Image 1 (cartoon, rainbow, N blue to C red):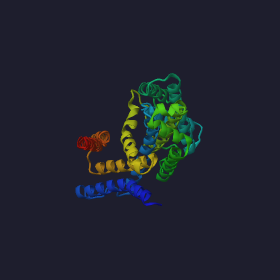
Image 2 (cartoon, rainbow, N blue to C red; image 1 turned 90 degrees about the horizontal axis):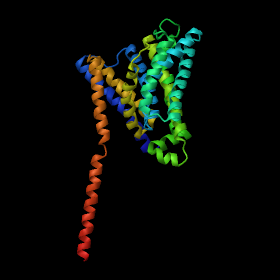
Image 3 (cartoon, rainbow, N blue to C red; image 1 turned 135 degrees about the vertical axis):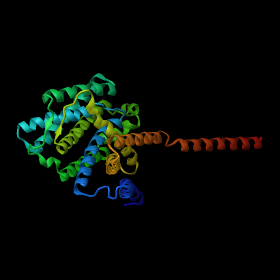
Image 4 (cartoon, rainbow, N blue to C red; image 1 turned 180 degrees about the vertical axis):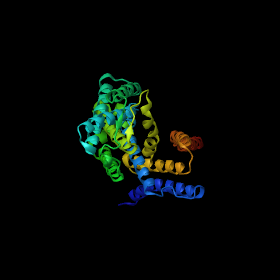
Length: 337
């Protein structure tokens, strides 16, 4: 391993470790305890980070190509409720709930992708429309009761080890897809320029269809873990299912930034762990849910401003250097004449 790769690995690991150190120090000073003390604290942290990682990875499939799918939250709810209830009625247990939810997530995501590819509907408009439809599907299929997993014999889905294994597999699979497949190569090309990618023979619409499908499957996995952890999932209407997607935007964007030292999937995992550690620390300090949400949104805004102006100083420096070089050439020409 060369020094450059080792440096990148250390930076990727150091970001969440620094956040842990900061929160640990503040919690001990203010509350007289650490940020993660008991096994319950650790279990809650792992579950929360795992759920957020799956949603952030799902967001990255489409956002990287300039599409924001506002229906992901509704896909998550519909796939979990429909697939979970079918699996429970068939008596298929934990594995059945996960498999059926994943299958419906892929189907619901593929349907959104198919409509986008076929009718060229703008992604934002399509996302809003499909979100409302999928919320109705979840509500109608369960008669408004949602999905109840508590006491249904699927306790293994709430086990921390299962969460770690599944999230690790999902992260690894996404990393392999991004780095070592034709699909990943096409994704990087499309992120650079959709027009150039299309002119070079890449089928950007087939790629979009696959992105929507993969994203639907990932949010379904997160929905199952979230439901198993809470015991139930409500069937909500009125676009309220989109909260999960909005909350995962910050980890996704921060992960894309950290990816400069690793890759997209590892960067998103590092970002999710970092921000979950921040949330956990603030909750330990008893700031309240609304205050934590406000701080997260402010930090997200600051981060977006930073990203938008990240190269501003460098551009000014290059401009000044070009002006100086041009002035020196004029002086040399004037002297020669």
